[in-house]
Image (cartoon, rainbow over all chains, first blue to last red; front, side):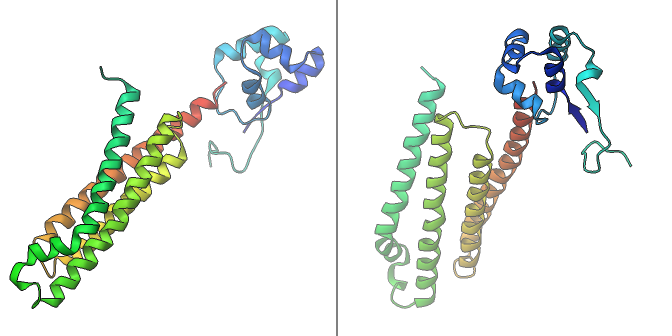
Length: 75
Length: 149
């Protein structure tokens, strides 16, 4: 599965999630969906905005983890 | 002019008319059966009993369908449209149609014409079932859309 590490990056940049949500123009609720790994997809525009505001690469906030029960797993 | 809200209200009124018609038919059923059977009313006890069981029996799913349709329509008015709750209600409606189908199929062994009614009820149930499958897919798509950030 893909793990979202936005909160780690937020801590590094010492930014609150409310501020990030405001800067990238999404609601707090949607940012919360992303942070709690409930999101099913992320738009490139959102990813771009997050990377711009947190000054990082997509790889810094998205991480691939080997997972037994992932629906996308190939045997 | 036509709009979504008015259309919904028309449907709600129609559901109430339908439910009232079912209730009225329940009240008038003894007279209707007497009228339908004519001179055979006293003699053919088997057919008479079968008619009563089938018609009163199918009133229950019919009223249940009215209630479920009302719930779905009220949900739509509350903007709860593509929700698992509506899928569940639609599934119950199709089961009710199949229940009516079974009752009329059984009655068919006493009055052959009722096989036609059983076929109609079964077919409506099938259509509702396919609609339920469609709605289920729509709910999946909506969930995916809601969880796209």
